[in-house]
Length: 196
Image (tube, rainbow, N blue to C red; front, side, top):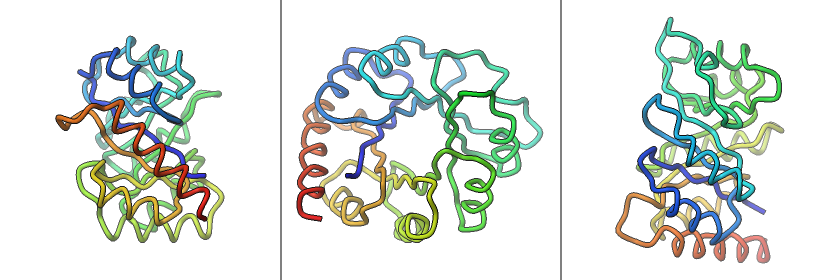
């Protein structure tokens, strides 16, 4: 069965995140924005059985993201490709690390380098090329694929149809109730698992 990952803006209220996590099966949250440790969001996720990852956009030649102490389960990496690859290779034992891939070459390099998942696309817009790469990756490699896109009905239908292991969305930016949106996505994922 496909599982859900939530992209969570750092300013999200812990109560809103808690309600969303309690509304359906969420494998992980990726907390986005800023270098300040969002400890309340991390604790909220972990207390409800979801892995808490901190998103880091890396610059070429920048400091290792692992130097920043955090209670999170690991990092989600974006930004400079060389920095992403280096951070994966340098991760501390027991930490989860995943990374965005913008091409097949990047995906293969990151997967072979030890990334725990490879993330395709962004939660802001569903890219046809990202969906195609995610399907290609899932068909050939054991490292899980994550396909990211918006939380609207049309995008969700396309993401679910790919059968990629994980889909990632942000349910916190619209006027809709995040918990209600997670519940509806959870129902769609369960329906897809039954019909597949």
